[in-house]
Image 1 (cartoon, rainbow, N blue to C red):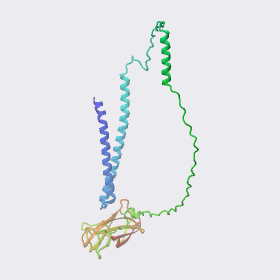
Image 2 (cartoon, helix red, strand yellow):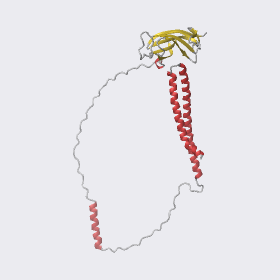
Image 3 (cartoon, rainbow, N blue to C red):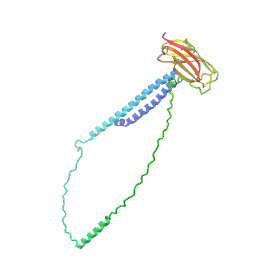
Image 4 (cartoon, rainbow, N blue to C red):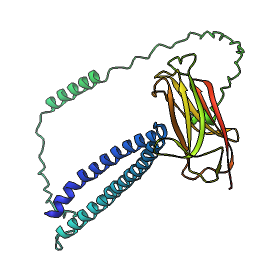
Length: 302
């Protein structure tokens, strides 16, 4: 009884696992997308790790559900075969049974001597001839078509040469645009005197939000760099962009919507868990698509 209940519930268990795996897969995609487009580096990192774990869990559930469906189907076939073998009567007939033919006695009917009158027989013969004539009338030959067919000349088609326009070449996207490392135009028009100015770079930040180990040269392998800025005449809703360059090539950056007020000081950071390699670096700030400030520094083996 328990095995029968388990076999009955198996399809529902497999369907439930598939639905759960699908839901986890959708959530994993949302987390991975948030890991790429989140407003802060820490939130993007946490969302990326969570999305990766959910993605692996959904794939595992998919595999387990498919494996259960496969093996439960094989088990059902094996159980049915065992039931058929156990329920078979060992003394019963196997195969096709051909019935035995029974001899049927053949009785020869007695021969009767016709006593029909000669005139009745002749009359019957004439009636039969008349019936055969009515059933089979004389065939009438079909008329023969003697008309001569007339040949109509076909129309000759003249080929037309159509000029084909040359294909239009479309420029492919650069890696800067794919990774959102190019400043975007602001939908909200920034004020004419809006300004964001880079003041300093540091390897850390104090509890009072002041720079720690400020400088323009840092040790190779550093995982986080802080940048302090001063801003004025800004408005909420204005698009601004920060981009980190190494040897003149953009490697990190994103566009944000300003929400810090019209004037004051603040900071932001760039981070890399693997550590930044040696080289010449530069941070550039943009308001809309216009550059407003830049700061150069180096990372070297100290």
